[in-house]
Length: 193
Length: 193
Image 1: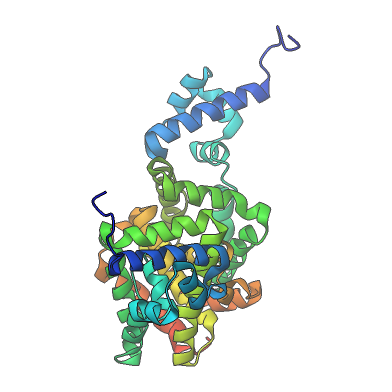
Image 2 (image 1 turned 180 degrees about the vertical axis):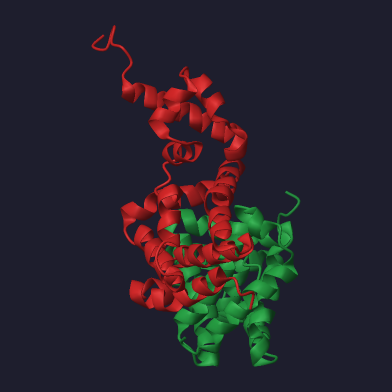
């Protein structure tokens, strides 16, 4: 009764949009879902949705609790000296994973993708379009090379933070940067060797 | 009633040992469980267990349905020209994962490790002792480098076969070998660069 007659505020509207987004992304995937459709489901117009979230990509990041916004992170990766991209990327990646709170949402995303095809489809399309395609285009290299670099880092996350194999779990972040940065750099240099 | 009075045969004894092994490995991990303890639980002597399975490692591989026996695979990886180890390893790894039947047990192991700490502990100890330590010792390189090579391949498996990111899922095995073999070789060469 306390809320009777209260007008829905910004928080309620935002939550309604996020709920609708989770439904649509879950049912149609990242590519299939449209901002217009999500707005309609939430009973708001597309302009209001844009006011709240800015873009389909940012809406996805918010709805899926993705801990990292590629619209922020990708430019950071690509800024600065080209020959230090590998080191910058590995340091940033380890930074996300190094604390239990930081890695929790990544773990949730990985576990969902490993056990549910709709979750895998969302992660797949999002990674390809929001991360791999953008880095590949900016650097003028094949997406496969960017994906191989991503695979290197995700494999380390798997073995260091989930399986906790001592050979990787006991290494310091600096040791890992020294080990992995040249490989990530090699892929992003795109020299094909 | 059909089985009344029937003496337990080899199959039953084998299954009883495997059940006991799963219990012990689950409760005590790969390092903590002993062949003697497993034999006692199964009501057989250690000599009979050795007759059936040969070693603790082989018993673990059988009990956990691990699709690959490191006692077979590690020597294969280490045989042949040293400068082709990267290519040999990547081809072998992709061979295991390339068919749905081949990757099913790997997927089961990964999913268990990602969601259960006892399963993660078993995978952790087994990888470290049966794979990483042996390759590192044979090559005279730090385990961390072998683990980084393993992480590269497991990350590719994750993105190619589970998340199915197009950049990796659409590549041919030969394209992946060309892309990944130099990196795996680099780690195993141990030149520290």
